[in-house]
Length: 167
Image 1: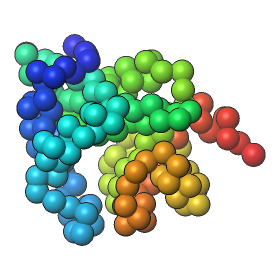
Image 2: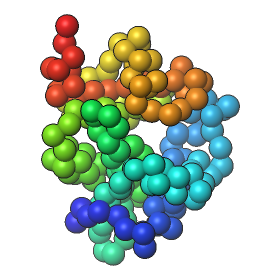
Image 3: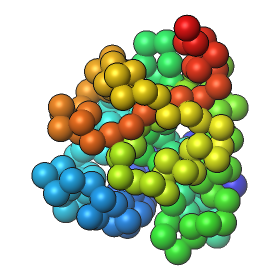
C-alpha cells in the first residue's frame, strides 16, 4: 500500500533512508559521504523545507519511500529509497508512478553521477538525462546543494519538462 508518510513514521523514515543509503557508500564522493548518511535533524529540515514523503507499506512496515518537493514551477523527486531486503520487487517503480500521478508539474530528479543503477532506473521509467550545462543550471535553480555536489551529480527530467524545454 502506498500512503502519505506521517509524523509517526519519522523514525522509520530515518532508519530506512540510512539502511538503503549504504548502497551509495563508495559511490558518493568521500568528501560528501557521512555516517549516518541522513541524520534525523537533516531529515527534519528537509520535511520543514517542504519535502513530502510517500511510503510503500507492507506488513505494517515501510519498505520504500520517495519524497516530492514543489519548487517554483517543477516538482523534485527527493530522497527515494527502498529497503535493501525489498529491492527489485517493484516498490520504487510503484512509488514513482504514485508521485507522477500526484502532480501536473514537470518532474526533475537529481542523483549522483556515479550511481549508474539509479540513473538506469529513472531512464527505464522515461526520464532523460539533461546536458551537463543544463544540469548545472537546474541544480542551481531548484536545489540548495553545495558546489561539490553539483559537480558530481546528474539531473534527469520527465517528458513534461523535456517537451516544454525543447529548443
